[in-house]
Length: 194
Image (cartoon, rainbow, N blue to C red):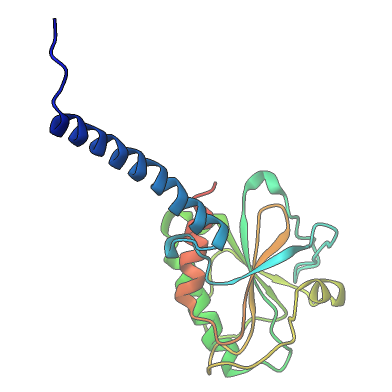
């Protein structure tokens, strides 16, 4: 026959049980509060402006500089970086082309999975990504890019840049003056989704 636990032992056991329940349920309460307050870890936040709803380019059929059409072809799982500079773009386009090329090279073995779509004529005398596709300017295509005519920001990055998913939706916009490192980190996360 066992002897009943003495009062101090029983109280200590109850205290430990209550502490475990509080810790267990408290972690759920804290997680729920963080979730519903909109907080997200910094590693999960995108740096570019998430477009809600995303612009749909699937109905657009861009024309390449050689006159052929550029297909969105979602089966290939190709991501796109879109640059839509004005026709009179000078030094800012040269600097942006250098930075886009550097970002593209930093993708390493995933670089071939990212096309850079340059609407208009890219600057001469600058190394450009191997996957650069020069598109003919199209009013319909430009109007589908949110605030494509917005200018401003720091020198060399005075143009907006866009990220288009493999299906043809414009999902991210980088405002004039963006940091190229932000584009690289967002694209690196997106390329892991393949």
